[in-house]
Image (tube, rainbow, N blue to C red; front, side, top):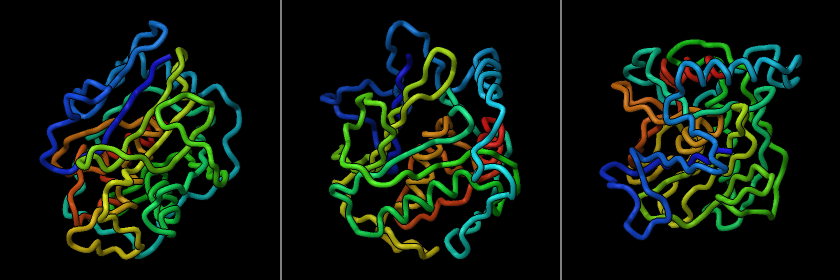
Length: 264
């Protein structure tokens, strides 16, 4: 079993403090459990082959993920000036069986009552088939299964919980994933930083100056939840490791599209 932690930070961040439990490498941490080799920030050809072969085993897809192509909610996204290359993506390792990421939400310490709606939109943006940067068909589906009072971020408890936690102030969100030896994701926890006081949880495509866009952060963290890793491409993709204030980063660039389509 391999556990992977991925963190989205504010620009200029230098990583966790010396007191942090984790040792950071380029904003991404891989912890080895039960002596199973880690897949790394970018899957090797052999590892990717095994992952894709395992993913292909189920005979059916989730009924809501198959069929008509998914489209983005209108009016929420900012069209990027540059879409970049379709090669601008990395994998962190592991995929969801049947392409479905089932999750529940713990609202404790959320900054606003509309936070869940923003998070749902972020999860939809990462699984959309099309964006302003093109189309790449994907079966990926984020399956919201209601609210929960359970929340032990970073502790494997057989539940995929999205919620809020107190991190260092330069961290916006973090994703903790567990991948088994066959290359399947078995659990993912996602947390947004409740110590950030300037979240923007609205649906407007224009993010106010000085505010961090929760939809953009949710899109990024959901990408980690599905198996994408950070990429510092020239198009500043959704999976870029930092996000500033006043920025709408909800639209998948060409590399984000290809990465999700390749995995699912």
